[in-house]
Length: 409
Image 1 (cartoon, rainbow, N blue to C red):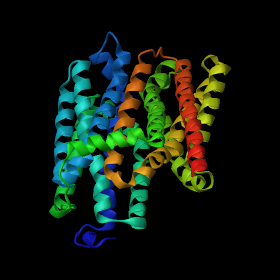
Image 2: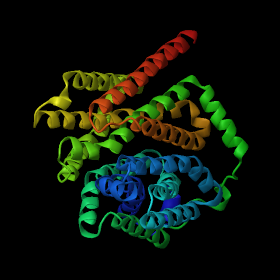
Image 3: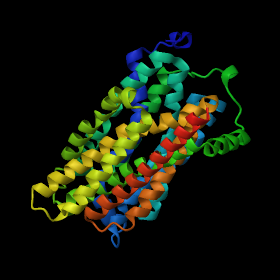
């Protein structure tokens, strides 16, 4: 604990709970929507209800754009101000989404809702860094992330309960209440953590030069693109998993429970990565994971799992979905660390750039692939296999670059 954190009356347990709630804004805003997509598509886009999946990616796209500016803005104007502004935008956008009568209005509202959500989510990391350092910071973040992993497990079930009670528009009321509770809690209990003398003016030319420097570095450039593909696999799966449970397997009613169980299992991937990364290294962990994803997706694609009789086809899909979620825990953190390693001198800006570019690219790639979705699992298997294959090839290229650099030294 730093001296600065000693000045605050908020205890450590309360602080962790507050930060975890800010983190959870993103997961809750995505996963609670999944059970609502069929009803939203039928009401907002009756001619093309499958386009309701874009409600997820528009939010992610806004979040990615907001990630680029939230951190630097909080460095210049203070943490609390940016969190308040972000929460205000999030709440206003949720209200517009609640009143939406067309899919187009809904998509714009969700874009701005994602933009607003990036404030509390990204700035919360900076708040932790303001108050804690070293191993204590790592401990706080680990506890926060452990709590955060539970949200995807329960969010779809919460969304289903809300829909059953008041309809899909009630989910946006829940978003508003969730954000109000977190921001009022922060406003009452957590003072500004960034002193005036520690603030840094917002200089766009520095942001531009940081982006240029990062993409000029081959290791950083490759890791950002691979991270985009790994996130794209996750986003595409999230976009289509509910409709597959419903249309392909006729299990819409039990979807929240299956999703929750898989999320809990997949959450252990971070623990597995922590125990293996010291042995194999970050690059090898990512390469092996993507290689495994290629093999699994190819095997299911060639086996004709879509034509299997129940319950074998559904069981195979559950296994594949678990693998897709599991790979996120074995790749995203490692890829982020690979990209950050040579950028220590601009760490704050680098974190924003990496998060923003990878999220936006992933959302665009997933949306483009989703256009061709036909309701079955075969295209999903093929798309994930292709993205994993490109990422695998890029990681092999990164390995060759590292070998050449070591030889030159």
